[in-house]
Length: 82
Image (cartoon, rainbow, N blue to C red; front, top):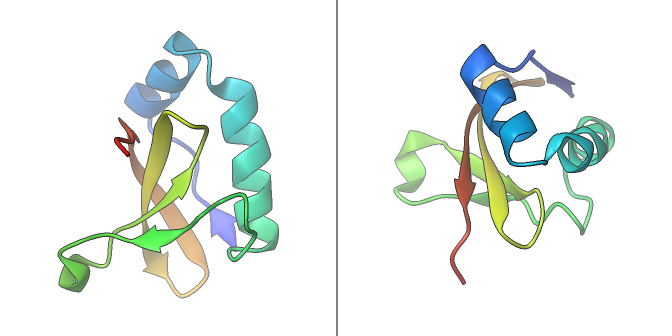
């Protein structure tokens, strides 16, 4: 997998919330193995929109889409409510 560079607003959000190290670690796992258990990747509803998420930490999830089969674009970072 290849992850496209973060857009400036998302990078700013990650830095502001102290998530830079967690993002780096989890994005490395995503590039190597999208099924890694600590990522907890899931397809979000409505499923036809093809938006996925992975766990950044207990509070935050990263939203992404596939631009092509193996190219991922990060589209958001959001809080994750259990």
